[in-house]
Length: 302
Image: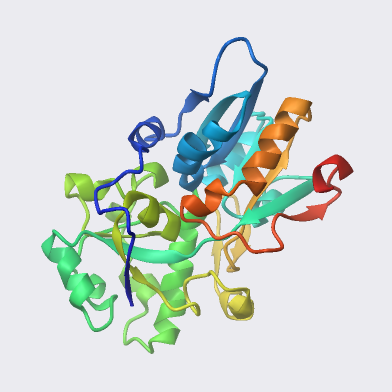
């Protein structure tokens, strides 16, 4: 099924500044800087626009936000190179696999889609294909994806391709035939490659397509990593990070934790994990979210 965001294909939802800030992962000051207490956040690249244009407007405290792929964020913290007040990642598993985190709040979910540029020949081929992956296999579509060693979107793209092979009973192993090294872009630059004509399509999160108004192919729940009902199916695929850490396929869950508590940090955190802005920026927030695991402070969970 082909889906399209309602905001217009080229709309960046006032997020151009945030996207430019996040080109290589950067630090930006969000909010007023009139001597207020500063709260620092290290976050997943796919949260960049929501933080820049949603969270900022809802907090009174000065917020310094830096975005990278989530696996890189976790490594920066684990190695002591970064020590943010709030850490917010696109995969809750990274808090356990790469970090020793006391507690985590799962606060949003997402889905994988294949976004495409309907103004390019390759994009039209993908949109018109009986099965969306066929022009990717025959090489008539320039595909973009992210680095699985750096962020969950990258390894989730591989999971999706492997699951799709079985789901569609494809003649080719899509995880082996579709990916090439030349397809890889930083998460914060991925969908902007449509603007430059570098790619015709991209495996991305639904929120990233929605917030920028790009057309996209909706994928079946059996392969888009969105539905807990298919958790056992998702768990049949895996990826090994460069340090040897194994990541198992699972429903997409974003998670956040506070590393340095203060009244200002707690106020920003609570807005981050409970704010309605997340839905506005294309994320899904289940009714029972945020869901806390571990020994979370009562002042946060109550």
